[in-house]
Amino acid sequence: MKVVLVYLGRKGGGPVYSLEIAKRMQHKTDLFCVISEQVDNFKAWQERVEKIAAIKTYTNLQEFALSFFDWPRLLTLRRKIKEFKPDVIYFPFFHFWLLLIGWWFPKVPKVYTAHDPILHQGEKNSLMGLLQKKLIKKSQRVIILSAALKPAIPKPADSIDVIPHGIFDYYLEQAKGERGKQHPPTLLFFGRILDYKGLDILLKAFPLIQKAVPEARLLIAGSGSVEPYQSLLSNQEGIILNNKWIDDKDVAGYFLQADVLVCPYRDASQSGAIPVAYVFKMPVIATKTGGLVEQVDDQKTGFLVGKDNVQELAMACIGLLQNTAQRMSMGEAGYKKATSEWGWESISDRVLTSLKKAISGN
Image 1 (tube, rainbow, N blue to C red):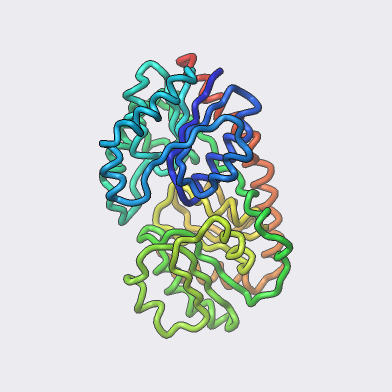
Image 2: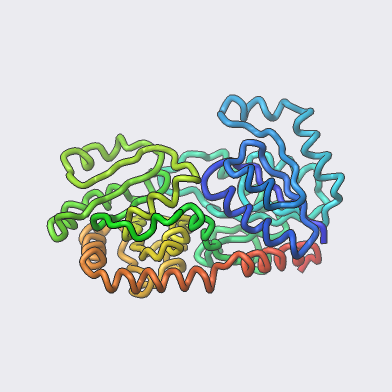
C-alpha cells in the first residue's frame, strides 16, 4: 500500500502528532510525507522520516491569500504527490489547501483526522468550519479522537474511526534531568487562551484555593488575549502569566514546574495537553464535557467536575494540592493509561487499518 501523508501546518501539537504517526507508519507501509518548510520540527522530520518533500506554505494572513495564486508552488505540490502514485492520501490535520489536493486527485481515497470537527464556543473562524465540513464530506473515512464527537460527523457511522490522541512522550526528551526539582504547589493552565477553555472559571476558583493552600501558585502559559480576564488577574498573588506562544522546545519546562493540569473547558473535542501531563505523571482536573471524559478517568487519573462550577473546581484543586500521596497515585495511573492505551505503535496500526478500509471501500 502506497500512502501519502500531507501535513502542512507549522506550530502546536500538530507537527509532533503527525511526525509520531509517520515515524511508525513508514515501517509498516510505503509512506511518502509532504510537509511544510516552515514546520517547527522540520529537522526532526528530516532525521526520522525517510521519504519527505517540503513545500513552502505561508506564515501570515497576507501570504495565505497570495498562496492560492502561486501556481508554480501549488503545481509542484501536485506533481510530488502524483509522481508517488498513492493508493490513499492521509490528512492528519486540517489545512486550507487540503480541498485543493482532493480536487486534484478525485479517484484516490482520502482519510482525514478531524481533531475539532465543530467550532468551539467563542471561535469565529467560520471559513475553516465551512471548509472542514466539505473536507469531511469528500473524505472516504474520517478519524476522530473521541467517541463523543461521532454525532458531529455528517457521515455514516461505519465510515468513522475513533482513534484516541497518542501519548506525547516526545517531551520527556526535553526534561534533561530537570524532573524532581522542588517548587511550590502549582496548578497549570496550558495552551491557547480562548473563551471556551474557561480560564475565567479557574481564576474565580483560585482565591478559594489559596485560602486553603496559601502557598499555591497558578501558572498560565499560552497565547491569546487576556484582556477579558484583567479584572480577575489584577491584585491576585501567586499567578504567573506567560502570555505568549509556547515553542515546542519549551513545553516540558512548564509541566516540570507544576503538579496538576487544570482544564476547566466549557466544551472540548479533546485536549492535547492531557497526554503531555500524563507523560510527566501529572494528574488532571477537567470538566465533564466532550472528549475530556474519555481522557480523564474520574478519581483515578484525576477528577472530572461540572462545567462552570467554581466551587467544585476549587475543591478538586485543593484536594490534590493538599494530598501528595493521592496526587502521585493519580499521576502514576495517568502515565499507565497513556502508555498502555495511547502508544504510537498502536495508534499508527489503527490509522493504517482506516486507510486500508478507505481503499477497499469497506
